[in-house]
Image 1 (cartoon, rainbow, N blue to C red):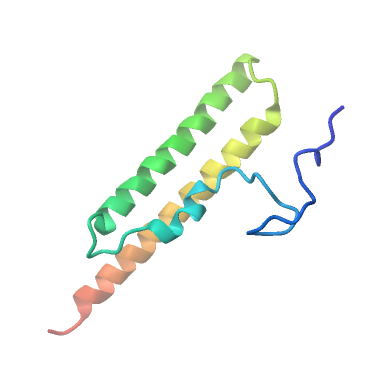
Image 2 (image 1 turned 45 degrees about the vertical axis):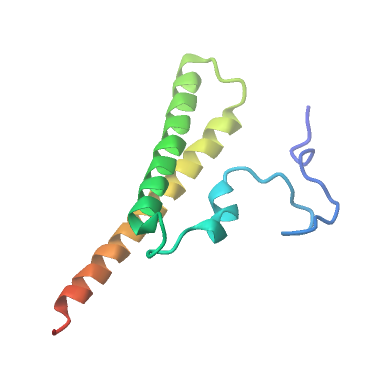
Length: 113
C-alpha cells in the first residue's frame, strides 16, 4: 500500500507554501502575472478565449477519465475524482466571472452620458 503523503516534500521550497511542491492543476495561477492588459496585444477577448479553451481541456480530461472508469480501464479512481472536482471548480469560476462581467456591462449601460 502506498502512502498518500509520499508525493509531498517537506523541504523548504524557494517560493510558495513550505512543504508543498509539484502541485498540479494550477498552471493558470503561475501564469497570472503574464496576462496581458486590455490595451496590449492579446486584450480581454484573447484572455477570455484562452480561459474558455482551458476549461474545455479540463472538462475533456474529466470526461475521458469518466469513460475509463465506466469501462473499468481506470487504474486509480482518485484520478477521476480529482479531474471531476477540477472541472466543477473551473466551471463554477467561469460562470461566476461571466455573471460579474454581465453585471458590470449592465451597470455601465445604465450610466448617464
